[in-house]
Length: 238
Image (cartoon, rainbow, N blue to C red; front, side, top):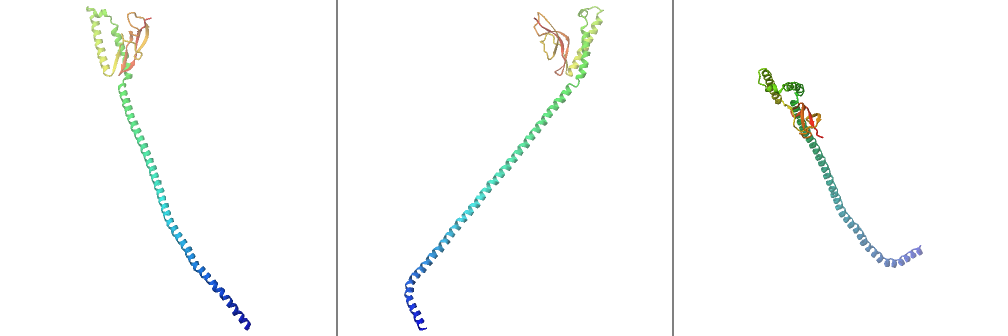
């Protein structure tokens, strides 16, 4: 027992100088360790603080970027809607203008048709009437000029009858002229295919070519429109 006690005490005394020699090293290590730990702990805090400061502006920039991206989208939608409304307005304006033009054309066409119907309402009646006028004209042309120039009592009745028929014809033609019907007698005029119908052609040395030298049947016009073409003979010199 005593030997064990002495041996333990001697061992303790031997190890004591070693511990005293090693303690400064441990102290320096522990003294330096808190500084290192403090630096390590401080550095992440500073880095974390900088990272937070950098993230905040990034989020703001993203928000501004989103707002900036949203504004062009809204502006583009407004432009599209404005263009659509503008196109629709142009379309309705074009339709309105076309409708007004069609209505005016309809008015003009209706006025022309009414005027034409009024002017040529007696066309059929006039065609039937010109036959009677032709017969009256033939009756006057059948009277010889010699008997009209005679002064004897035998031909006086014929002269009076001729004068009466002539006055009747003149009054009838005046009445027809009031309604737009006029007679064509183109003798001595240049041949007009729109108003004349050439029934024959013959040489006439004392007349020019394509001139009317004989009227076989007189023509008529109703309000400027040819109702019946005049049948004529035309000069054609070889």
